[in-house]
Image (cartoon, rainbow, N blue to C red; front, side):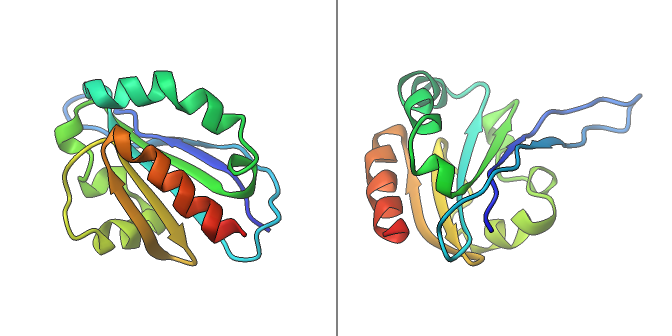
Length: 138
């Protein structure tokens, strides 16, 4: 059974020790046989990321494909920090390790059974990500 998850990187400053990660999971069910995750990588200070969130995210969250995958957001305060390990905890670390280029936002990743099978960069690549996802979910 797959589940949907929503993960947001939010720094919590505790004295002078730095930041940590907050995450919240939204459980659900899905019909896909293999575990499929869709990971959004963005920054709060990223104008193309904001455009994607305004133009595409609402329809994505309402889509039938969204219901069939685990959705993860790595959304950090400064886009230059989007690929720092502290924002990719636990089971996301192996995904980060698979990325040949650790830069650029927004980035859309599709991970199937732990392997990155689609890696698109730029808000104009969302349509390609959706095409790839529909092919995987068939």
